[in-house]
Image: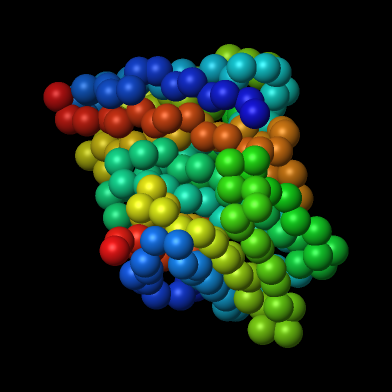
Length: 107
Length: 118
């Protein structure tokens, strides 16, 4: 299976900060990567697909980049609603795999 | 807009089986892939397997192979996930989720909590 490794595991930041979460795949997945946001007690919500395509309705402060094995999710100016856990996921090859998550917390 | 509505929470004994349903309301999912995803408390999601109801084809993660069965009833727009030989480690939230072609999971069910305890 393709391993997805996220960093950092926890990120402390303030409202208005620009933050970046990285995700590394154990082998090339081209652009077949998604980013999800999950809040406690809720299902994950897709933010980005195909590495950099913003899902409809997702604020433009979210952006994705990368291809191959190195990817990033950037939030340009953190809003109070953005404090949550973020996961990357590859869907190039079965079995689809997720990163271990990055918890974004208020500093 | 299609919504995925899952069955309610389950309490099971070790060694037994559980069958969770996922019904599409507001549309059909015949031509899409429906996956099942396990999320243990405090852990990241883990993909278990999927089905494309139109073709009846399934794929399973190695870790769950032999214990999980995913089926679909097109007449009722419902997909099922059955997990057998339950262990305490299977206590988790189980989600169904839709993927459009080769795509991310764009629609998720609300989740079904399964608790395995003697």
